[in-house]
Image 1 (cartoon, rainbow, N blue to C red):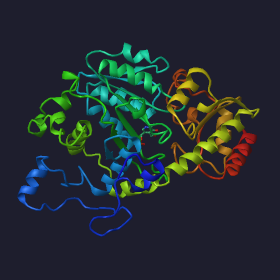
Image 2 (image 1 turned 45 degrees about the horizontal axis):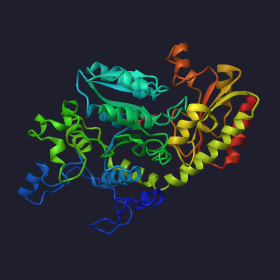
Image 3 (image 1 turned 180 degrees about the horizontal axis):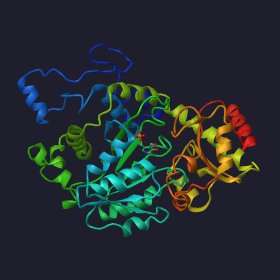
Image 4 (image 1 turned 180 degrees about the vertical axis):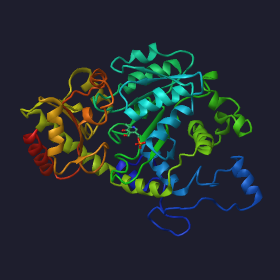
Length: 429
Ligand code: PLP
C-alpha cells in the first residue's frame, strides 16, 4: 500500500488489509509464543536472516508487526520496533548506539523518567549523558566529541512546552555525523521529526497513540535516512562485525532489505537479549487507538486552544504555558515544527502559589487527577506537590515548575463541560 496516503487513511489501512489465513478485516491478536518451521532448511534460513519470518514472539509477532508497519508509514520512516513501554523505547534507542565509554548529548527538557534512566542508570553502565540547555542549539555542538554517538530530545516537553529546535539540532548533528533521536510522544501527527532531519523517532504509545489509557507500550521508528557506514568507527554496533550474531555487519546484512540496519539490530540483538517485548494484546489495543488518532488530535488541539485562551483571561491565573500563546523563538520553533495545532497540553500558574494549585486540583469534579498525559479524558496534576516534589525548590524552578503551576492534558470531552469544571475549580482555588 502506498505510503503517500494521508494519515487519516494510513491509520486504518497501512500494514494490514486482511488476515492471510482467515480474511479477517480486523487485525487478529496473535497470542502465540512460537511459530512452526516448515522444514529444517526454513528454520536455518530464518535464524541466519537469509529469509525474514516469525521465529519466537519475544523478537517478532504478526500483531505487533501491523502496529510497527502502521507507525512507520504514519511517521514517514522505513521500519519500526514495538517494545514494552516508552521507557524501553528510549533505553533501546540509546543502547543501540552507545557502549561503556561512549556519550550522548541530551536536552535538559525531558520527561523525569527519561532523565533518571539517562542520568543515573545508563551512567552506572558507563554511558555518559551530557545534558544541555536546548534554548541554544549550539550547545549540542559544544558538547560533542569523538565519543558522541547521538543526540536526544523531546518535541514538546512539559512542563515548559517549548518546542525543541529539531531542524537546527538535526543539522548540527548531520554536519558532525551525529544522528538525532526525537521522543515525539506529545505531538503525534502534529510534528513529523523525520521531515526536519531527525534520524530516529520514539514514542511512549501509552499516551496519545492508544488514547484509551489501557495499555503501556513504546515504539522506535527508523527514518532510514542516516548513513551509518559513513560514520566509520563512530557506529561499531552497526557497521562492525557483531560477535553476538556470528560476525554479522548490520549495514551489510540489510543491503537487500533497505536502510533498516538500526532497527534490525535493535530487534535481533537488544530485544533478543533484553526482552522488553510488547504483548500482542497491547499491540492490538494500540492499533485500535491509532484508528482514531487523527480525529482525537484535532479535538485535543481545538479544546486545548480554547482552554488556554480562557485561562489567559482569568484573573486568578498569572501565566499560561502553551505553544500557541508563546512569542519570539519559542513560537517560531512551534510554528516551524508543528502543524494542525499546538497539542493538548496546557500549563498555567496560579497567583496564590502551591496552596491554590492544590485547592484547584482538589476542586476538580470532571478532570482526573493523574500523572499521565494523552488520555482521551481530561487530566490535571500539580507538579510541585507530586511529579516534581522530590526536587529542590531551585531545581523545580529550573525545570519550569513554579509552586502554583498546574499541568492540564486537555481531553476530547465537550469543551463546555471541560471549561465548566476548570472554571468552578478556579473559583475554589
Ligand atoms: N516519554 C515521554 C515524553 C513521557 O511522557 C513518558 C511517560 O510519561 C515516557 C517517555 C515513558 O513512557 P512509558 O510510561 O510508556 O514508559
